[in-house]
Length: 530
Ligand code: NA7
Image (cartoon, rainbow, N blue to C red):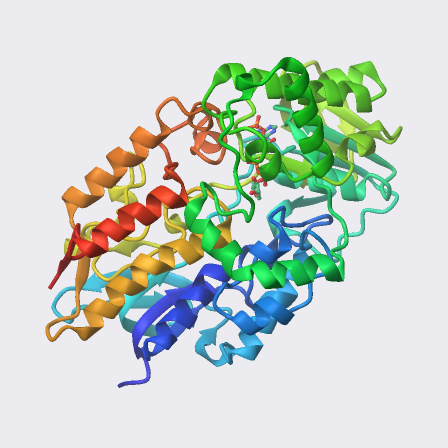
């Protein structure tokens, strides 16, 4: 095999790319991973802002294939901080000798399918060309930052940083700091930096419903229990909606008395975790608007109890459905109570300009700032796929095929893009990202395994019919779902201004498992082997 020819080319060395590397190597295939960053970790390498933390229980934020690691790798708390996740990823890479297979500081500039050679050609910023029979664009669900379209943003003379491009040298202590955006990221940053900065102005367009994370040390007894039950916890992903490591409760919110409901809400609040709060006590917050309003009222009441200043409480009060990706925090509303923290309502009074020295509002008011943090999120799911042209059969451009909406079969493959596989592609199941990677790996590597055992060209491709059926099924599953109606990165509404077509399969891992089993049993229905 010539030096630049591999069985598979993987783009990206985040968790999905590393999973692809591991699985491909387990099939004895040769792999080249190309990564634009100087190290592994992907999203977890770049999102190193203060307070960055996962809100998935530590035991479920793992690669599930290294049993020894599952039982022995230490994690001190219920959740992992960004440095802990990065250390874990680096540990896995070192332990499994992955680094020599990864070429860092190399940006892919284009990838195209060569049908005569039955292989992918991948060009890079270093001028190198790689060829591979399989192509894995593992580009990250949350990798393309969104910047607000506010005039003057380039002319700000203070320090300006997007949360996902954080400069570790940035020292905010004693500074006048502004932050635009109050999603999971904004909330983590505000909570972390409020005690350090001279003043903090949080510009909020849509205040969020945030519940306590309930982060706490994990005792040796808890760890022992998890270790004993690890196999069950991992298998439970396939019985779950979202694979976060707890049993989701199907109980309808209105099936219990008002007193019982209040009691359960309070228990959920005390227990902590946004995901558990949304799915651990009741099963219909995102299905039934009446149930949704009940939980909204509870969280609003909590906000008004914690936040002392009525004006601040008003500005922090969410009004939309509780149907974005749920947010949890480690003392956010308490941080907002601080005298040095101001909440500016930029829905009623929008930001009209970023000036050389700060932010100007529509009523003419200006806020002078030394630093401005842009925590405005990501062009999620398909956004990362626009970073270089991907051309399939007959030179078809992936982003042209997805112009109307991203379309895939099972979230893993696209018609007209032979031998291309995604582990966190659009229309994969909604849920815990390591669980998605685990879940989509199953059909992908079943397909590759079968493909490798065949005698001919080793080409496998999703059919247009199967892809259309999957898109239709995803639409059906999201019909009437409040997640789909509420503007957020889960439906592309954060970029387009309005919710677009669904980016998710909302039938749960259980539904996904049933579908994939049927697909495999029916001779890989929906895939053509050539
Ligand atoms: P999110 O959740 O998409 O939040 C982005 C925030 O930025 C949100 O509050 C937006 O308000 C705000 N935003 C965006 N543009 C503007 C402008 N122009 N003016 C004011 N405010 C603006 O991104 P995150 O990074 O917090 O979280 C993404 C995921 O990463 C998270 O769910 C975890 O899974 C990890 P809006 O709501 O659009 O009014």
